[in-house]
Length: 324
Ligand code: FES
Ligand SMILES: [Fe+2]
View 1: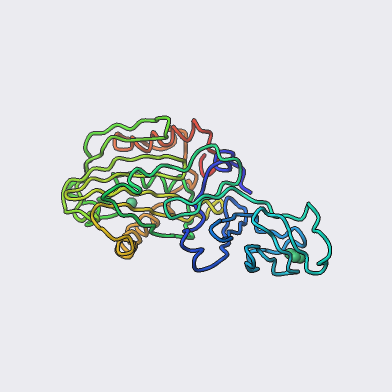
View 2 (view 1 turned 45 degrees about the vertical axis):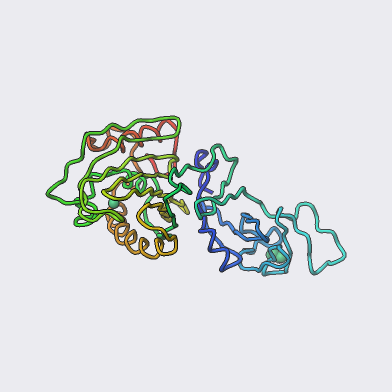
């Protein structure tokens, strides 16, 4: 397990909740730990993916009577992690030690979130979620990213790269300047003023000046509200840290520009994928891979104010994962 107390006690997205409607068991790695997620009726359960008997991966088993059944010798584990049946000894009550390690799990924003330790925070907010006039959808996962979460989040908080990485869609190299803005650290994390930028083809809105108001609510979860001519988008990026250099990105979108969630997902997923692959190429190339929290380590200009606040905040929190 990757030892970072901040992330250990934080919530991380592990799968889209809808996934459990198609497959009763999902295996996922989180912070170097193999997890199994299963559904018992309406309840989701997260556990260490390790059978106490001989160490087989229980995620290779099946769900029967709301229990997870190990593929090797058929031990059955109930929703509280207890082994309730050992088929080779049907008359015997399984010993108290025979149990799976269970972790807290919650469903929100269409995702399932797991905490490997003791949750120190509520799930990150998403101001536009379930607001009248907005419809929302999960877009992703974008998996196997060879970059650390903090580099990905910082990229998300950076409006100055749009004209160069996302030319013709989110920016125009002939109009590369940002409006004036400040960024600050609050009790809720990092927030910026609305940052004005010209966009030739913003999702949902018409070409023109748009504004981004950024938040980093958690070290690996950021959000912006984008006001465009004719529409408003709220968008969350949250990163699953699987291993040191293996991340998955999830985008949750809420917009006033559409009125149907399924259509929104279908339409936005390829658009976000196109933009994200442009970002991925740059972020995976960054060296050092660890985000330097010492502000002397890289050059910082006025247009980097959100990144400066983010790095300062991570340093205050004492985040070790993905940082130097
Ligand atoms: S290893 Fe799981 S039942 Fe034996
Ligand atoms: Fe980008």
